[in-house]
Image 1: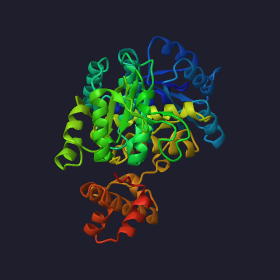
Image 2: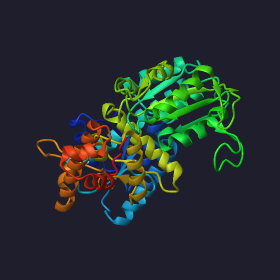
Image 3: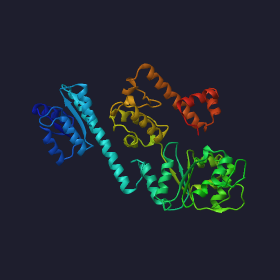
Image 4: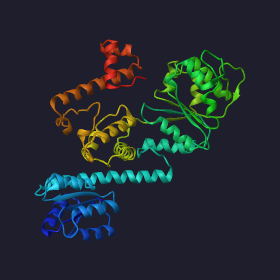
Length: 457
């Protein structure tokens, strides 16, 4: 749509703004009062309202108050000759997106309006997507317009009503548990339990006790009977997360349970019939692990009747602005703070990052920016990334806005993160092997990994 309404009681000024915007291909109209603007908006939608602060009987502040109530998605730019901090704070507190002081340059006007239009476009895209998902599928926090992700969601719709085991593969932070929960919600088992277990967090002996359960006296410390998670998920769904880490001996026991759908708690000899749907998740390819003889082939076939692959966030760049805006809206619901918007420069910064931590990392970055931003607009300086990816030409504007020491720190962090991330991946998480390849001691590697917050799988 990209339409702008100019509210200016000085005809020559209004006409001048109109000509400047039209010269840049921006569709615009002009009216001479706040009252005319309200009438015009009722009959036609506008993305951006550019209004003078000082008008006739109704001033620009009163106008923007009314517009934000009736048309909250409209971005508002306030123009005034009274360029005081107080006026700017007042305008922004009532919902203005931008603030310009007369006299201003044509380029400044165009840039300000274009940024407001970009924000409106992103907001429209997000709202349309949320409405479509709510109407068609109810996908909740899975926000996407990416072709790969939409294919995965289409598969979910087909397999959710069945009892087929599902294997979800994808890097850490891509949303494997979210997808598993969606499968459960869309299934006939939705009214029963969904239980998620991170199998990599439990040693083999404890893993067996937690999943299968045990009777009193089965081992030291077993002071009472305990139902295992498999039986607790009766007629529901259980997610076994990071099954790639399961020890081979336990894999054999799990396979027997899945084949017979019977669970024998520790300390007993009587198997108990079970009825649960199993969904597994892994941040490594189980077929590769089968080839390396680190995962049982028979268990792999049992778990992977249906395989779903979640793409990393770097392969779905079109989702980054949608997710970022969605997370800002979620922050506004979680925290007792005024609503905030992400400016276009910040979106460009987010788009240049490789997101090794995927959607989970983006959520953390947006939360941090939302909580620490003093104003109502999240700018590039509010966004803290672990690294700033530099193109060969080094022509990234936000990079050269940093002080020298900060820029040097960012570059060093970039190098360390990229270098070690790839070594860790190629070494299958073996830190001794990472040390051998890099020429660093294992202790030095561990310190750098800890400082950067890298994940070792």
